[in-house]
Length: 295
Image (cartoon, rainbow, N blue to C red; front, side):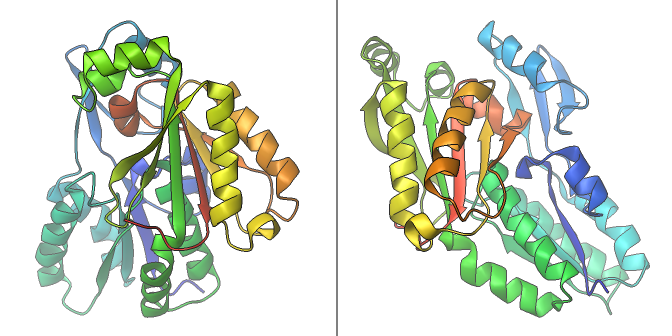
């Protein structure tokens, strides 16, 4: 028996079937590209291949977060059915959408004073955020109460590691995160920045690594160093990629060979249109549970 309803946002970057099959409503971010607005609806309105091809051809998409009215619309039928709600948001370190969720909760609970809406800041993004949603689903379906699920998520969310690398620095220049000169030298030297999420859920550059082969190897080394029980890690491992599936597959193959006790194969998803508007094509991300993150 479900003790609560579970909701999230589209930026959890999991397959549409995951949300449909597990009865998890999600609120859509939006993006604008070539002067037209689209919902971030997991590739339905615009296939990921089309989206990243447009960026590669010079398009510069912008994004907008979920507003309070969208959250109210998503939660109303759940509360009307007598269910409490556990909502997990995209990291407050990269988006203000949690503020819209809080406003929506204050408004909607005036209509449903006997119900509860609990909001958890994932401090994560893309399929790392999605991995936390997957754990919330496990808790929901195992009969955990709303409070038990909330407590587990708050206690464990900083054990969820996010490691990223990029082979294309163009979008980082467009977004003002690196200079044109730095990108030019980085491209000439074949530098692939390695980044991760800190304790505030912000994306932080950690190391500049020359060549894709070396950064792939380093990413797997970081997992061996940080994963729970090291090479004996038995949890789930998710990845996401922005139009560079073969690079993600190369990382996944190394992980599956080195971590024989994984809970299933590495799940490789697409970086969605909102996160991808900022990373551009060429980004590979890895997510797993381990020791607590550092600042």
